[in-house]
Image (cartoon, rainbow, N blue to C red; front, side, top):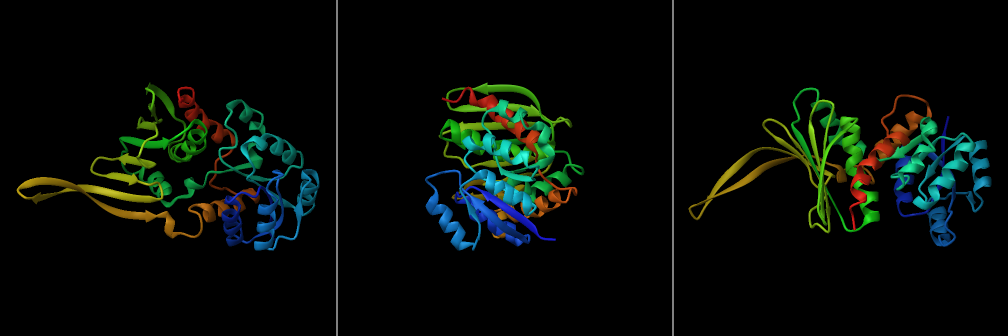
Length: 305
């Protein structure tokens, strides 16, 4: 039995979705754009991927998807997501929706009862190092985790910081708030896990730093910096240069997500979405998880100018 996918949206990310979906034997059923100014994008995607059915009416699009037993990819503008979800769920269709779904926490509550139908596209939880850390946690003590999230404005702050938060949420589960320290540009939020691992979220505006996640263990550091590259640091090497001592971390690259197919995490994401469609055990975050992730981002949001 074929898996059909009907697509809402025509942004650049759609090409990455289609590539990963086809890798997992999905057939693209149809596509629609809700943005009246996206005709060129719609035509380009239709022609490039030979999609036979395009729509400009959402109800007709959804009736066709229902008739073809198609799942739905929602990658529309965030401002359209509430309206789109309300429509799609009336047809009892399974959904993969791009993160973060909503920026407003209240909107999540309306869809919690539909969490079994909603698969959130947090592609970074499918990075190889995420499972590596999840397994390692059962063997070694992780003392603390330091996450750096740099951004330049409020909206990007909420849209992008959720990537790092999603990884931490997936690995460690429920987080317990301890403390918040902030000034005009830096916002440090401290949480603990059920196992009392300490997590520092460093949100920094206009910082020259890159996104990173650092896991500190007894005799080593595991570092994702940028998040697509994952290193192990087990010692410091001393070098004597002109009679002065210099110290350099000796790091070994374990995973480079950019070497995998397509956009990192997408192929594995669709592999799990396929399991989700068959009601089998899958690795994913649902709408309730997405709300928890956005709650952490929102603790900082009120202070961001």
